[in-house]
Length: 71
Image (cartoon, rainbow, N blue to C red; front, side, top):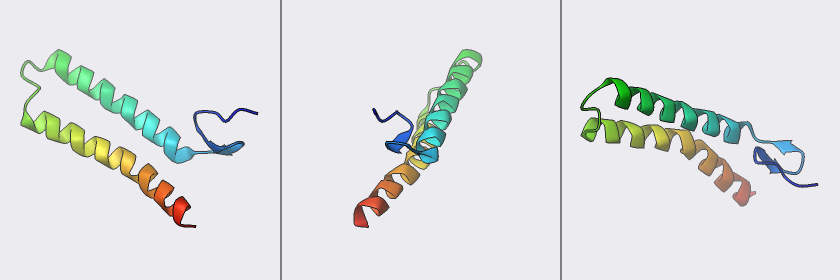
């Protein structure tokens, strides 16, 4: 059987991967809303905010993967 996108291994669901995916689309929606309603939204604060959110969203998945490799 083929492993799905939200599975670590066959039959093992990954809630961390699902949460990262949901938060990524939430950030994209937030950015789209800001760019539509705020005239000068792209500045250094906007870029830093996006960088920090992406870092916070995907770091747990990376750390989980590192912990699995050390076992």
